[in-house]
Image 1 (tube, rainbow, N blue to C red):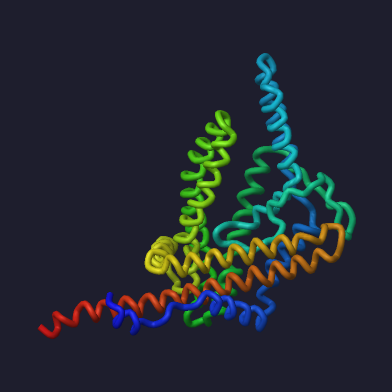
Image 2 (cartoon, rainbow, N blue to C red):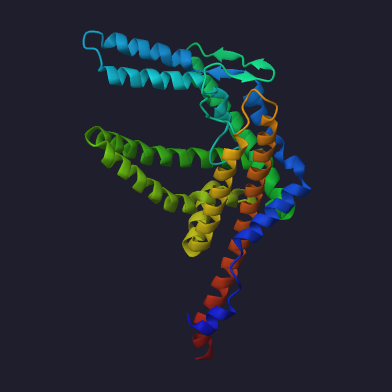
Length: 335
């Protein structure tokens, strides 16, 4: 492509233009933040569902198996610390599903103390009693999370782009949400489990080398996140099925990687940076409501901006490819 042709191409959609559009949409339709607020308020003031009793029982049974050859003290302590951390996690956090789900400030956050104090008093703890109940509750919570996530994404996409462009039906949105979530999570575990085992094995030999590998993997993960970042967007903006939406996300990142990478990085920096601010109020004060409202607004704004950016970048890509195709066909037509 020569300079003359490049100058005739339309400008690439701006990252900050999309962010501003997302801000305007949520400012004009504040009700969009209702679901994230309800979710976080429930995690904060509602009961905590704990799997600590189940994991404690599993740990006790495992230690009983090795009673003739006790595990090293360091390994036993590590397992005990893991079970204690599990006991502090609110199992209702499984309502936060990925990649499509209701945004949440406190899901899977491990509190400092086993007893969580709220303005309404000490948080009630419901202990799961068996592995079967743990399995049933986890599956049920994930299913409810998929339903809530599909509704949340659908509302934001329709409000941002209009019903004619993004008016996917509720049933189709739920089906494609479930399908996409299952496929991506399977891929994640296929990649994550071998990598985590390798890093763990290296860590036993050299903690320094393990840290270096983790740093390299963190850098590489960013280049992997960009191609899959827009996997849900084709479902809600173009009524695509899950597989076509994944292909569309890969296609967009392939042709617009620098700009798309900048958008993803901006979203990550804004969301992660402000989350530190939103988590400043402690759980025992009503000021935590400020953090919940702020997180709900920003996360919904970023989601709206991502739908706007995805629509605009696809339109830009279509125009550019059409112009390039016309330029390639011009000599043939003249001949």
